[in-house]
Image 1 (cartoon, helix red, strand yellow):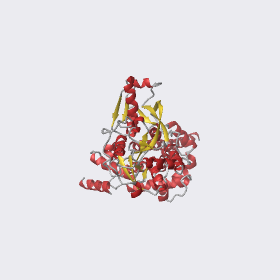
Image 2: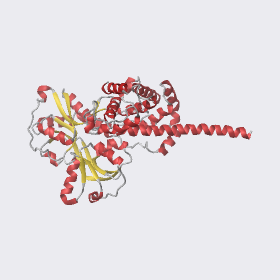
Image 3: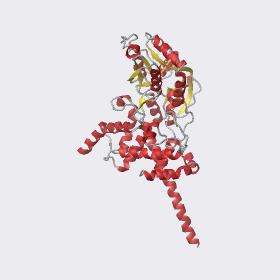
Image 4: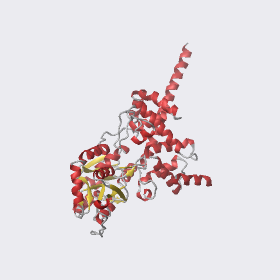
Length: 465
């Protein structure tokens, strides 16, 4: 047990935006952009703003847009990630950064003490529930058990409704909007109010959630600066209208352009596609699996979860093909065309084998494939964080059951802020592995059923003769 602990250690190492409590906080003038050639950016660690992707690279809509702006102006960048929207707002007001890029909505309250760029995306606020509810007007919100993320623009909207004697009750918790969706998915009696862009990104992971109402007021997302920096806002606006216009269009398409919801939870569809889609690729699954010491049915199950066996599939993050490979991964495994079915399967199998082989030997072989699958989804380094957290939470780090209990904590600030690789959508790999296991079981049982059927036919034939 002592040796195991040592190995584990080595593995771990290797909304109302209320106005800030101080309406006029002490301003801290950082170095000018022109003098230092550096743009200091205040942001949040969320999927739509700034995070490390499964390849360990910085990513997010806000990050990519800022990088494009900075490059166009010959600037380097420094990112300061805050825990909440409220903290970002307070920090930009104090002058801790040049610009706040954190999916901020332009609201009347914020305009009193911040200067905003032109809006880059129109959003609205959705009322989302764990089950279907009859909501035809704002008055109907009174009957809902509403949970929202503290410090977001939803606070402002609901608080204003409450002040106008609408008597709408809600609870604001100091957790991310993504975590709110997870809570509602787990407790179907609850509802939330959430920005449409955030819901758009996460809906595919929680297809059971119901959008029951759309709030009438529209908002614009924009970057914010302190009022003492009007020239920076002018520079941003000029860029958005000219050179940045095409880049903005590309990023909006990449992160928010996916409209169709995957129906991976529909077993009936899966059974149909075993007959209609799988036969086209079965031979390549078998070849790639054999070459990499994998079970072909497990590989096929991974592919279905990733793309529903669609060779031209593409996600908002830019991953493509049957095995949904990133550009970085495709290069690592020697794949040139991610949309070529045979290449994609070959590359996905090689990548999955690499991930499984990276799992330490003290993880039982029967468990390592689930760890490898989780890595395929959330990234190897985030899985390392989960193993470390399992140790700290007194869960079994050598069994998938123990690790999947702590993975959802990677999206909660009080945990990810102390982890080496930070924020991750931790519940997603848990759902991901669970669904792959279900598809894998169905494929195994269906194959077994065919074998039995064949044997029965032979047996019946022998009796007849």
